[in-house]
Image (cartoon, rainbow over all chains, first blue to last red; front, side):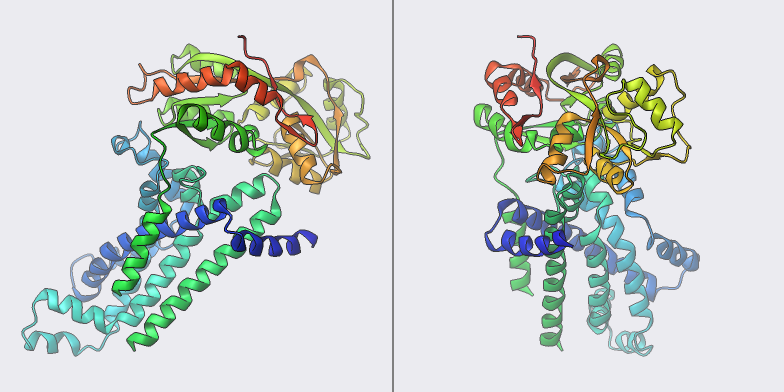
Length: 230
Length: 272
């Protein structure tokens, strides 16, 4: 019980005194999750839109695949990405192993199915009259995409938050692909794993609290944006 | 939205640390990382002396050697001489240099249910097995795990695996010690990590050293460079600089002075 309390106080101390290691882990976490979120959104929204709007042969199969990928375990992604990015692997020449972009590749694989699946659902559940209306107004496919996204923005924001929640808290990919390198690829989650491995529970708890604070800040930020947009 | 993007861009910039001129990748054991030797002494001092930044990943010796084989690191700092030799023979690793040592110890609850205190390693392992006292093993192919397995063999016993009293944690050394402590179990660890564990408990740890001091428990740490002929992209020059620096008198002295609770964690023994 003692170390829980100790961890709580230490969390405030670490944040308040601007402990460079803590802030490096926070910065790394934010940087890498921003990269993977940006990639997931940029790739995922058009894909999800296409999946939701269009009817094509094998659509059911694609949906099933995407839904299955929703529960892709992070350690399996980590393992696969590691194997591909290793210098002995097919993508080894890019030198991405043990770098943040490398981790971002893995986290994008994690976040992408969430964005695609939820975007598709959001688009499907929009007012059925939207598409014919836009068509009669002579909208180009591009305008159609943007208008639909605008209509579905609340659901998309939820999708983004769900993906962010999963990305920011995962440890398997960050550990395996990033290697938990201090000042470089050490994120909050891998730092927690390390500190626990060292038996420094209170630092681990402190970092855990920080991670929750980050999540809270992101949620509050999104809520504010949403209120302003509404 | 623009503001938000700007904020994110700024965050990205801030989170990219100022890079040293050159960096090298090192794969190492959990003991050198968990005790703070790398973070507190070697990485900052090496950067100061040479301007080279060390990026290290702390994994078990088994995985560190595999990373070298995959050309993913430039050098390794490990402690499993027999396993190292295999990689040297295969031409994956070269320039093996002995740097420092400590020793393995068998630790367990102060009450010592299997009565192993003062026994030899072989007798102690037999007593643990016979009394079916819980023994926690790393079970992760690390240097410590390899040593533990060889000790069962040296004691002329079958290496336990599925026995109920034999717990394989698959985790790092201190995690394994913590699991052993929770289970009131015995385990084997290197002395450096044990001292760190003691320090975590302010010197009053639940598990005590019960068996120590035998020749077979000697634990040699060495650094090896990845062979550039096998891995053309590897930074052999930096690896060589690192190994020579580790073996230099000044660094050796600093390693000998690296203490926790006033106890030496690693004793330097480079040949030069």
